[in-house]
Image 1 (spheres, rainbow, N blue to C red):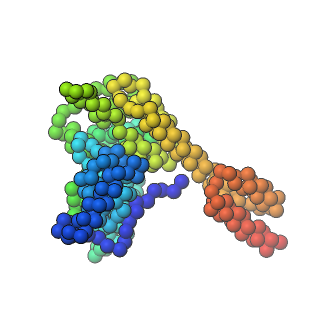
Image 2: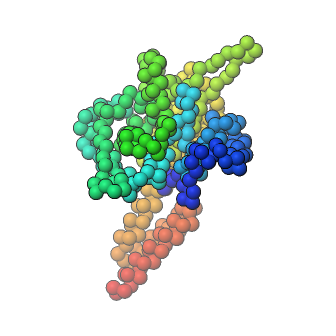
Length: 348
């Protein structure tokens, strides 16, 4: 499974002054915002029908030199404020900050000792580093599990804490060393954490499953009106984004349990079609990971073929996978096997 990339446009960036003062550009942005707001599957729910916020997304995208639709898919609404995913922040820093290379991560400590999403180890963490233009040495920021804030809503804090800690380290690195690049942009967990500091919340779990409790904190309350109750449904976009980031089948089970607990929690108002979409996305992601692992295993055996019998056996195995792998994968396997067979023939 390939890691998802954020679309970046290399040709031009726009300043806030250009966007707000250039009538021609402003009108183009407004027309695009109107078109974007009409989207159903190309923009998240909190932007659908919302021209003003779509316009803001377009303006931010132009300043970063990125595809507005790609940026829109990496946003979430938290406590009434627009939040940007950590993956997007890292992409912005890699492409727009004055660094000579990409952000790199180095893990330290015994990660096998990490005990779930609430781990507070002081000797397990990650170092985020990048070299700025004009500097001889890389600038670093170190972050341990003990330095993570109280808000750890993403299921990946339990399923893949290494990745989540790296995301957090990159955000703190950018806030400290590149504030001009991402000024005014916050990620969902930062907004949730800020909301925690402003208004005390009851964090006593209301269910046996801790994940369900965390999900419940993000549910919008139902607001009745004089005419009829306004039904607010749970926004699944953040959880869908988390599912897309899964890279190991071991991460499937805890997220599946979160979905089941959420469905069984009467306090969470979620549409049946959204539940089906979550389950389908989880099943698709699992299948993708399984196929990716299977492809890598077959490629390993292809490269290890030693005899003509091995080659023929691998050709049969590759042929059996025609329906599972895409055309490019099949071609790569066959091309690699051809090279192995040619080397075998040359050696006699």
